[in-house]
Length: 169
Figure 1 (cartoon, rainbow, N blue to C red):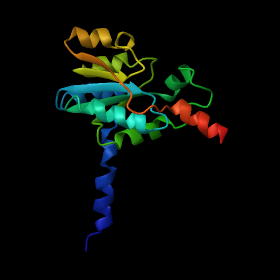
Figure 2: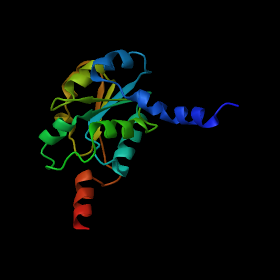
Figure 3: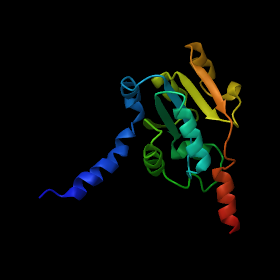
Figure 4: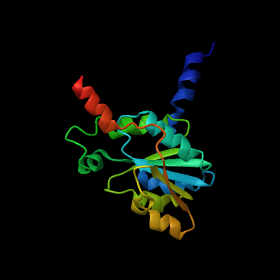
């Protein structure tokens, strides 16, 4: 008799196939449906604000690519000596497990511009704390006819705020 747990386990581990190395990104997005939406960030401690933003972003297209700052890139942002809390491998797996996400990758640089150029999204999205004019890739995406959006926050939550709360406890 076949082991039913083997099939069950592999079905739920499929999310890891969404994790794509930067050098493979262009090839992978060439076969995903359009319009393609792109966003990026640290996504260090996943919270309701992150999940809401990603769901809203996905609703704007047929596929969503998320690019995460590498651990070194997070550290260069000056968010604190103890950041990121979660390693890149853990953050990639957590984001990949979300239904809204089609592909997740990362960038070592200070900005995601090369990943944006790799996948040429139809829609570029950031959270409401980013004015459209300051969103990296704004000029490039607009130049090829895409849209750039700053989505208002539905839930006022931040990883920095959560860490401050934890430290007070």
